[in-house]
Length: 93
Image (cartoon, rainbow, N blue to C red):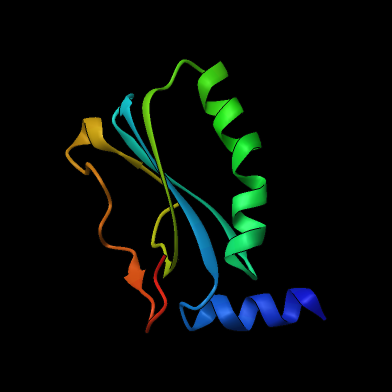
């Protein structure tokens, strides 16, 4: 049931996602979807640890409702900071 609800929320851009932006490498990563902002926040540590172990520097994290078009956007290829993610209707965090 949870997966069904999550898929509906994600379809409408109402699911919560972690947007992680790194300076080196210049990338934007999306992790999710999550049912709640609290659930996204609880998972943040694991994703950040993985990126740090891979050598990422200058990490910024945002929790927001959106519907990303790509899960990883490589800024080195001229796609820096994917703002193409569809915004939510309201309640962006």
